[in-house]
Length: 296
Image (cartoon, rainbow, N blue to C red; front, side, top):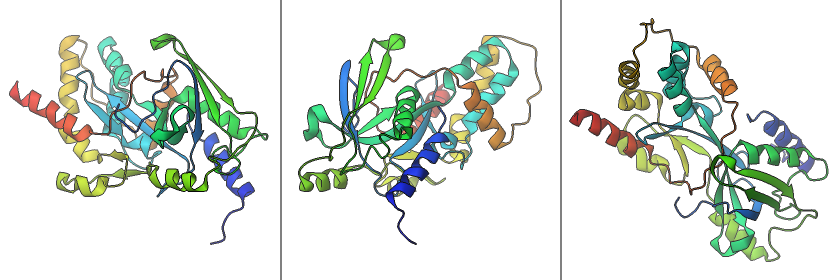
C-alpha cells in the first residue's frame, strides 16, 4: 500500500476529528495558569494521535471503562443500556442515577510537558472543552498537523478557576518548531510514548495480564460487566429509595440507537478533573463491589 502524502494524511485527520463527539505517574496534571505541551504522533497500534476513553462512575466509587465510547461504537456497553433504561423510567431517583453514571468522555494523547521535559512523554486526558479547541486548531489552514515532530506546533492550555468554575483556553504557538533540536531525544521520547490503542479483555480473567501487556487503555467484555456489576440489583436499590409506579422493563434499544441517544443527551461539558488519572483497574474495583454485596 502506497504511503499517504502529508496532505492526504492531514485531510484524513481532519475528517476523523470532525466525527468526534464533543493519578499515577505517567499522566499530565494541568496546573492553574499556563501549561505548554507538545502533542506526540500516534505510536504502536494507534491509528490517530488520540484515543477516546469513556468511563462510568458509580456511587460506591466503582469505575468501569465504557466499551462503546472507547471503541467508537464497535463494542456494546451494558452500562450505557442501563443508563438508557433509567432515563426511560422517568422517575426522579432513576434519572438522578442515570445522570451520575452516564459516560464521561475523555480523549487521551501522549504529550511532552515543556515545563518538565525530563519527565518524558505523559498522558494528557483532555475533556471535551480542550479536545474541541484542538479540533479547531487542526482545522485551521494555518496549522494542520500540529504534532509533526519536525514542523508541528506547541499548544498552550491556560487553566483558570477551580472545580465547576474551571475554565480553559487553548492557544496554538505562533510558529512551528521541531519536537526537539536533538534527534536522539526525539527518538527516545517516541520510543517511550505509550500505545494508547484500546484492547478488549476476554471472559477469562486469567488472561487479563497477557492481553493488557503494552496497553494503557483496555475495556472489559459485555458479559463480564453485566455479570459482575449486577445492574438489576442497582435498579432495585433505586426503586427502594424512591417508590414509583411499577413500569414494565422496556426492551433495551439497539446498540447504535442507544449510543446515539446517550451521547446526544450528554450535552453538559465535563470539567476536566483536578486530579491525576489512576491506571485502569476496573476489574478489581468490580470484584470488591461484588464482595461487599455478598457480605450483606
